[in-house]
Length: 133
Image (cartoon, rainbow, N blue to C red):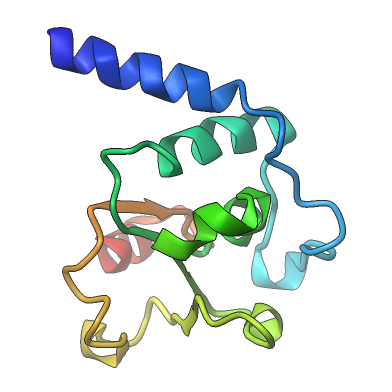
């Protein structure tokens, strides 16, 4: 119980961090791709979790708003796996991700290498959720 309490305390401290913002970098939601970005309060929670010291490598599946809310130095341990290629240009932490494609299409260096995965599937149905699992 003590370890879990410590983890939650670290998360709460990181959530209080004021530098989780997506202003300027993210652009507009693309509703034709079922793309909706998180609120600032939700982003603070996700940023805090991604920045915990016990998290070594993060995969963000279909969650560009979290990636761009993180401060640049925190992105060094984060990969954005995304279908929308507009975030690929100038982003060495981008990997194209199509949930319908086989896992083997992902870069070999990322498969099984992340200890935190945050996913926001474009459809909430059993078939899509099974592909993300």
